[in-house]
Amino acid sequence: MAGMIGTLWDGVALRRERCGAEPDAPPRPIALPASWDDGGAEALAALAPGSGPVVFPTLAEGWIRRVTMRGRRLGLLDSPEEADDLAAALRALLLARRGAPGIEVWRERKDEARFVLNLPAFLDAAGGFDADAYAAAVALGVRVLDILGQGRAPRLRVGFADLAGLLAAFRLPYDSAEARAVAAAIAALTRGAAEAQSGRLAERHGALHPVALIWPEPPAETAIPGLAAAARAALDAAAASPGLRHHGCVALAPADAVEALLGAETAGFAPAYGAVRPSRDGEGRMLLLPTRAALRAGDVAAGLLAPPTPESRAAMEAAVLPFLDAAPPAAPAMPATPQAPRRSAPRPVSAPAARTWRITIEGARIALRAAEDDQGRLREIAFSLPRESIASRALHEAVAQAVSLGLGHGVPLDAFVDAYAYAPGTGGMVEGDPAIRRATSVLDWAFRRLALDYLGRADLPDPAAEEVPPPAQAQASQPPLLPLDLPAQHAPRRGRALRHAA
Picture 1 (cartoon, rainbow, N blue to C red):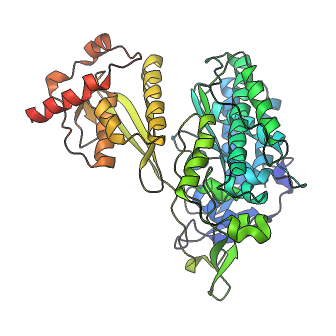
Picture 2 (picture 1 turned 180 degrees about the vertical axis):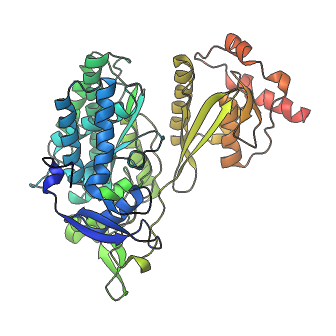
């Protein structure tokens, strides 16, 4: 492996496979660590762009070098030695299948980056949970995302995966108070470790946000020894920071191929997929093999990993939500990856989707990202407005967070559409959306677009030209500052007037 001599990759034994990202995809040569299972090969096929050969260390080193080079260029890494240390830590974390950035980083997409940590990978040799190593991995994820965000991103997306696999290792039923206490402590530890690292970055580069710990007390004790104390210590460390670099750091996201690469069987805090997974033997006959969670659970796996009720999942979400910076997606458990031969293996269940719209309003670039649950329902939104002022970006970020939290707590999308459709602001002609040609503001376009896609509503016509002030006038008359005017006084009345006019 030229160019990697003297690094961790130098001693990694590789084996070769031929597979595609899906059972019916054209196979491509894959070189991956010899100890990894075939699921890792399929994940690498999905993560690597193109259709040619994939060598795991080369593919990983591509994004690791981009991170360290950008960090040096931006002054976020002070020396070559610090960059080398960061690269070495990322290699070790990845090789242990403990954590990695999302698919958007591997494929060099412009989407907002995320960093996911595989909880069962932090089980130690004695059967406990290595909370110190987990906290260090969270801090590492914050550093990576901060660099990828040019040191200016107000929000980061560090999250965890396969809580169900961790619970199985300690034989905790998903629908139990003990499991919910573990989940709350994991989320609190993640939040505390992330904000403590944000505070350390603020000490070096300047604080941008105040410390504001508004979560409840973490569990006083859990079934996992040392976890509650680690969570408490992490929150205390965050509270002692003089300020924060980021407004938020922790968010769960729908799974992509990175979870499969790490060996995680579920996304976020989703329940286990089951105790068995379908596979085929060398002669093509169907058989059922135990999942990783079942192997950890041992002889109680069948009962322990039975499908939980919707109420138990809602209770788990309620335990985790106070420690997150955004409402979590309703992601299903990811099915375990079948073993070869892949040409006859069943297609895996799709992970929840996310979609992004990109338009311009009077020449200003706008991006709207929507995350969905496994049933295609909207769960979270986010805006990207690269050319807007800091105040305008903060306004739209606050609206997006409020909407995401509301959706996560059962507020119907219709309510937000009625509140924000035809909201005043800086509007004008819309380019890039054939269904919406004119908007009174970014919020007007965004929520009418969501109404079309998620509610099938065709009762929200474009505003008349005279109802959209010129950009300069709009900026003078509608400064992008909170609070917004009460929705009931604007959106519904304006919408009815426009419908009558049509």
